[in-house]
Image (cartoon, rainbow, N blue to C red):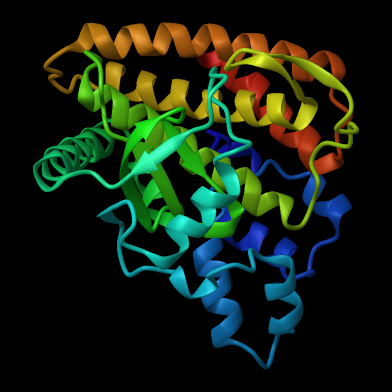
Length: 299
């Protein structure tokens, strides 16, 4: 989600029209994307089946476990409680790395650990709502389930195969738990925003064989990975700045500030790489221009 209301038409209508083929990619590329409520789009498409070819739309949408979405409201659940959890885990575990040479290992939390994690997440979401209603609504629009896991090799995970469900590993170190969940839910929701846009536009046309340094990974990444990193970090920085500037009383404001400072440095690094080397589509270029505006506005 990007602060760009002055540059857009009504964002939900604009993106829905583009997704339904009523705006050309050239027209959409001139508009700066904002909140893209993918679940609402799917609901509307299925409700108004006479006006849109639902089969074609669903063919372009995430095709695995579509029955999982939309949920009536955001729910916090334990890993393993939904049938798609193991599917995604098995698919991702040998390829997903988060600054680690070992594959990720995930398992359900025990009862008390899950309840503690759920409480911290709900409190973090409450802080988000106080800091920025816009970001809070963005997360509620895109995320149907927050799945708490135990394990290693992965702090957060989102996958187009389970659109709307995100995995967040329970806190295992001394980090502020509110910062932990605040950071990762913002991060993964931003990934889903780009995944939704990419069902209709590639955004970046660099071949995957081109690899670049990424501020969030030790290994080099294709440009699309760096582009995702820049976008999610722009969201994290905006959301953290909103809570820091809101006047909301924070138990450990220093931890929020430290997370902002680290995220801002990584965001600027990723954005510099994208600006220097990305081969954009028109829509992809508008997203990058918005990230540039975000970078200028952050302090």
